Image (cartoon, rainbow, N blue to C red):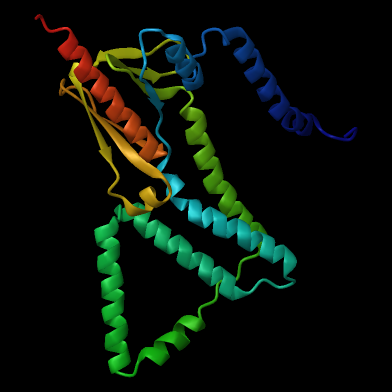
Length: 261
């Protein structure tokens, strides 16, 4: 370190300087920073609110979670094996391609069923023509040589994207209450309240892979056509959809209770 140049010293201390600046900003603004956890605690302490829901949107890259798991497993296997097999790389590539097609084309259960039926029909056709063995020989010869570091790098790339969406969700979220929704778009008190009568909420769980991973979508559309709809990819959609239905029920009860007798 004593022989380092000025540039090397700057590069070495740059991450520590960034962390220090981040901590300094947090200390100066900690009272005004408004995360979704703080909003949740605020709504919990409000005696006039009995039902609420605070949600944020995950990145669509969460769909690649099966690829992340396979990458981590193959990384461990590559450490245990002296020479990783090219078959492992081919299997990983297959997982990635399936995930890519599902993510790229928004494949649902209907599309996957059609794909399975199509593959089944193709296998029967090839078997009838006695070409099935040739196909298996061709697929068995596919090899993709990858070392363990490559598996780890792919897993880290997707994990970073998922982690960034979680951090972003600390400051960009939507809070549902019986009377209004609060749309937060920043780390400070920059939220916007909109009356519940001005919005419509829809729960969408048609994407098979998202639902299998516990995810679903909450869509918020506005009566004002100038506002863009909000699409949130939410984890734990089963529990959160029931909570959203309970909030809708609370709205109906409140409206009837205010009608004159």
